[in-house]
Length: 129
Image (cartoon, rainbow, N blue to C red):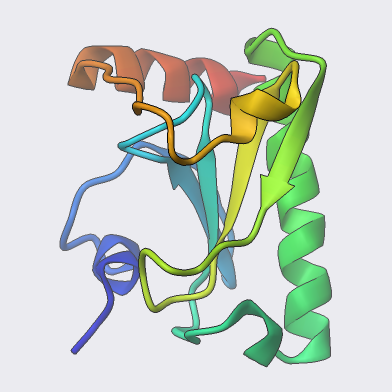
């Protein structure tokens, strides 16, 4: 059965897409720990990040770098944190999270809630950056 990320990639589930190429996609996390929290996902369905081939692993980081720069231009923060947890969905992915302190990457804290319109507006600002 396809992962939720594969279903997003196929367009079966909507997302607030920030960027995409032939190999990777970036979209806002629907349950963010911080405004601008983004998921970067390879289009090839692989469970573990380190099961990606070397060029794919390098490619996802290069792709994430461009997305991170756009997020930084829109969401006030000290830097963009990166996290690989991989427990939520059996499809390799990385989290890009705008942070000002270590606590901003605490996945145990209550997640933020945004309306569809707020997500859409944020995604549009990031895409334009």
